[in-house]
Image (cartoon, rainbow, N blue to C red; front, side, top):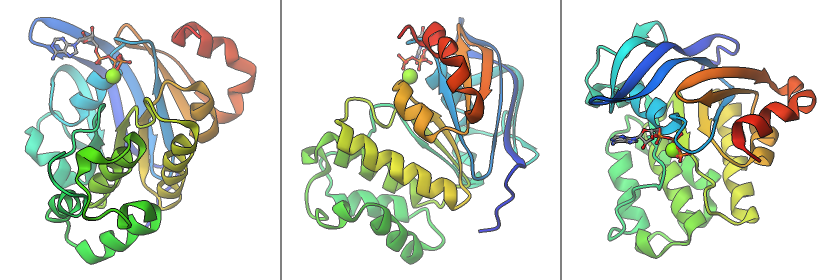
Length: 239
Ligand SMILES: Nc1ncnc2c1ncn2[C@@H]1O[C@H](COP(=O)(O)OP(=O)(O)OP(=O)(O)O)[C@@H](O)[C@H]1O
Ligand SMILES: [Mg+2]
């Protein structure tokens, strides 16, 4: 994959969005570059998941712009967004729990132009899944389910991956496996937008952080600014 690091892949400007009459986002601004992990941080209900859903066309943008590689996404229907090679791993995973690991992956690979290559890549990242191909997804541990959710999204060979709290409820060894996979994808040149509540995880993987409060961008920091600005993390996370 050709890596255009430092070039903005996703540009979100003055985004306003919500659910019918319920307005949630009131001016969100951030961008994500190829080969970068950009974290969205904010309290419960700040609008982080809504921002990811707006990018995927799953909630309506009322004002503002979402540009991906210079094309405007807000005009596209939701089913056209994955065709741009943007993948979402939603909060709470959403696997087919009655299907096996192999069957869940097969669903993902149906959308791929290069299924063999993607299958190899997925098992490189998560060898544990290969050992459990015939197990029903619903019986996997929480961490294994998260791996499968990430693996399924990777089948479409995304240029931009949106991850909504992938480490929620996982024990430290599983958190480490997931964050390690995120770092490897970043090294492949994938642009990663990560919603994450664990400050330590954020600090270990993020290149930049945008703080969201009441549906607005209130601050943003680069990795080399994290240490001197720990107070900003506590202000907007309540930790
Ligand atoms: N389908 C919906 N209909 C109406 N309101 C919704 C809907 N989904 C979310 N909301 C509201 O939008 C606001 C933002 O929710 P959102 O899920 O984006 O927050 P979040 O920052 O992801 O929070 P968390 O950290 O708890 O996941 C909340 O007040 C929530 O109740
Ligand atoms: Mg959320």
